Amino acid sequence: MKFENEILEIEKRISELESFSKLKNINLNIEIQKEIKKRDSLLKEAYSNLSSWDKVLIARDPNRPYTLDYIELLTENFVELHGDRLYKDDHSIIGGMGQIDGKSIMIIGHQKGRTTEEKLFRNFGMANPEGYRKVLRLLKLAEKFKIPVLTLIDTPGAYPGIEAEKHGQGEAIARNLMEMSGIKTPLISIIIGEGGSGGALGLGVTDKIFMLENSVYSVISPEGCAAILYNNPDKIMEAAENLKMSAQDLLDLKIIDKIIPEAQGGAHRNYQLTADNLKKVVLQSFTELIKLSPDKLLENRYKKFRTIGEFYEN
Image (cartoon, rainbow, N blue to C red; front, top):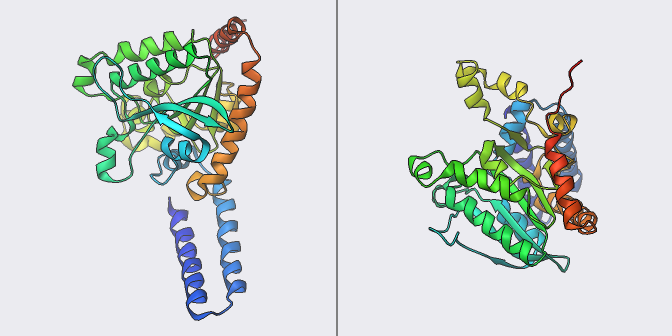
């Protein structure tokens, strides 16, 4: 985004002033604080007037924390579990057991890459059928041991390749939707970046759905919507607005339960603060959900998704 260039210039000056101050042993705190104040003011102004398309760009920012970053910041003793026990391990899906403040938890999430090599290894965060089958295997494992599950959603969508279709992509996602509705342990999902189509929903049938402040969640990408519905790829900004894909829009529509605030200027500017905000919501929600009986948990989950998109006729 255009305003980011100005912010980056200010941050560059701050870094140079700090380095020069340290190198020459000169106190430049007044000048440094002046630049920091200027940056924070610009961030506050820019991030209070974001369009839906701006939020899409922020959600896709390669510097945003990914699932592995949150696992490192949130958990102790995390052990990753691999494979779907049918075909192979899908590296675009991370899953395993860990502890948050001493409480056992299963964490499952999409994992994108930052370098070209990582992006290819993680398939750009787009899961194949074996990825969704791995998700289901871990959900069943958590259910067996009565361990709550946190899913972190960040994907452009399920992988659309021919091989994925041959291996049953549609069936794998549909089975997850069905099976997740009946998992007898507390489930929470958080959209941490980009929640795209069925690829996101395959991890999203949960008791609570949260979104980070600058994340997006939609049935289709703005590019896909512009090309298909408007027959004009240049209308991506209009498509993003009409899709109502921002956290604020989806809270108004009662599709999500809560917005988790990010650090000022986005999660990518302060991983730890954003992770702390996320942790607080997760622990509070699991404390509430664990008190419910399995039958009540499933009943509430069923009602939640049955009322999404409800309408009334006169």
